[in-house]
Length: 549
Image (cartoon, rainbow, N blue to C red):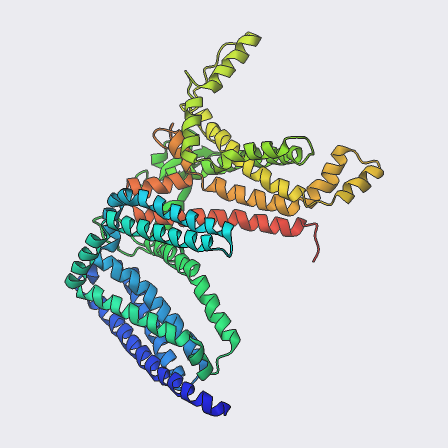
């Protein structure tokens, strides 16, 4: 009886598997043809080679995966179902983006932005309908509930239809239909996307899974991959892809109008190359000991002169390291003291915690503009209070040119950056302090330990993981300082390159001088510097950790 009832439903379910197999074969063949024909396109020579071959390899990998899914499904292996769903999902997402791009939909969103304001009031009508619908909950189980819910649904529907009308949805659909007729390639891609969506629906369904005897673990694996896909695809498209591309560009002479000639490590050599030559006399000119057309004198000491090929890089490296040495202690030590105060039971501490955290969430541009005004030597508040202090003790007014003197400009940037970072670091330290067991302080008090002894013998050792995290993240942020310097100084990096940092230097080389190959090399050198600092921090933390696994 049971087998008779199951037989009519089991046969149609299995009939979908050949359809899925046929679709995967077609997708595999289509991707293979696209991979082979892409380098032969007429405009392929204008593409970046790494992008061209990367796209070809991606299409080839998709073709292999799709054909493997078809083979596994033909052998009735459940892994073929997983492969088919994943391949079709990627084809649907990437193909949908490509099809919409070819249709010009993303550029057409500008037209929607121009008409969206006219429909915005009707969204308020939709919200009003939602409130009317929700008000029906007050009359649960009565006729009034039905009336409220129907009225709310009608108001929401009317508001949404009016919204679509006023933003000219009909005109947009007519425009899209015209584009579909004018772009057969985009239309074909979108048809493939719809087909992939239908196949995903069939393959992911329970009947096909039962026909292939798929395990529950495979369903969970499939769901996990799909849920992870937005982050994973975003990482590959917007982080890993540009990262690999920048590594390739760093080995080329990527200059507008100059082509992409491969030069290997020449850009890196140009960044760090230097020469050390002995001097016959301390005053001997540098041109007599090395080629000044290739090297610029950096400094001389102990009878030697040092020449560098990219002097501004070494200036930027020096300024960046100085910034780290000044900004990190000023951002960490006051944050620890502040967190200790905020961890007390004094009234109003929650308000002070929020106040001290505000600079960390405020926009860097706005903060920098305010500090730039405060640093003004004539009308700035900082010099105003300095003047009051010097007059009180009878000293001459120094009239400090904070942002106009090489000796004070970098310090001014450090002060602003430390002020902005301290609040965030104090919150991290506060979280660490609240995890320290109170029993330890009570036992130390019984043993006669004072406040200072408890802080250095209990608080600091137990805060070691938090301190490591705070110091590491602060160092990384300091090595990447850019916005503060760019906005505070005019022109950026002035005066006399005293505030020129590595990120600002690579920005100027790439987007002011358009030497993208050299700028990419500088970026990877900066990565190496950050990695070295982080590695040292991890090594020191491992050696000095007070915790044992």
